[in-house]
Amino acid sequence: MGITTSGNARGLRLVAGMAAVAVTASACASGGGSSQPPGEAADAGGVINMVMAPDPVWKWLEDQGIKQEMEEAAGIQVLTSSSWDEFGVYAGGHADVISAATYEVPDLAEATGEPATVFGAYNTDRSILAVGADNPAQNICDLEGQKIATFTSVSITLIWGMYAKEMCGLDLSADGGDYELVVTDIQNLASLVARGDAAACLCLPDFAIPELSTNQIKPLYDAKSAAQMWAENYSSFPEDVTHPQTNVFVAREAWVEKNQEEASFLIELWDRGIQEWQEHRDEIIAAYPEDFAVRTPEEMAFLQDWLDNRFDWFVPTTYLTEEWVEGEREVFDLMKETGFVEEDVEEPSFTTLEKPAS
Image 1 (spheres, rainbow, N blue to C red):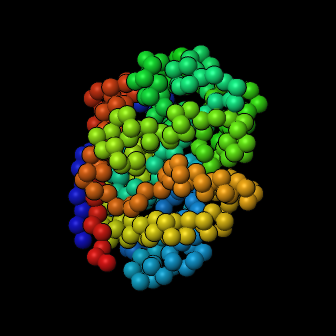
Image 2 (cartoon, one colour):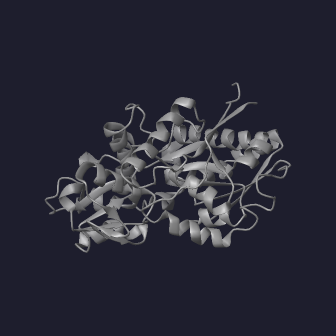
């Protein structure tokens, strides 16, 4: 079993509001994000504590007995809890592993005072920019001065903020700028635009199905996701639409180094989840429609068509390669170029794990 770690995740200072998040999380931190002294980790003893937002593939792995079967074979157990505040849970020392956006990882390190590392991939940024049916805007530049709704001042908003800066020289951020940014619940974004209470939204397509399927809102850029926009305009690997990542698996470097067997098992388990998604996607959606905001057969068909013909945001494998890491690091180059991070910020650490022989 081999691992390779590159980089050192320390001291990210995001201009667009991430620093405030880090301060909040830091206030909750205890013992540098774990019960061990900084830079040290306890032997996991075959137990992984993981926290992440509700996830349909994880539910499928559990309900189909796949998780339990693999745990028994490996002699390793994954104890999970669900939270939308993964950052705070991790910073408070209550999780070995969480999922987070790649560009949040250095801030996790700053909040805890310990280097963190990305050791698995999962979901790519699927967000789209959509406007009301009668809005004549053709791109993000045309929306200058208008109200844009989003569910976060960071994450996907940072990515679209970089696009606005790069394409138009405009500032899209929670600190004011050239747009009026409105942060609200993810479920309300599309309906705000459809009602005319916002000009546009940074929407996740699965949470905007009723409005998208009835043409109450229309996507710009031919409905391309943020990841497709990245591949088309900024990536050195244009065929790879798995950047940037909004869900990667993150742990303290010390924990991964100390517990290579547990870390490798977790990524192997999640890779099995990806295989299940590829083979049983429609069954998974039908089993957990609430996780895709699907309510009717018509909405189910719309989502299936979106995944087939527009964008499937699940990566083909959870395992990282050096080439993939290089592609993900390019996100930080644009963040520095557009002023979303300071020039002296060190990029996040990545740990590549060997995939077991089949």
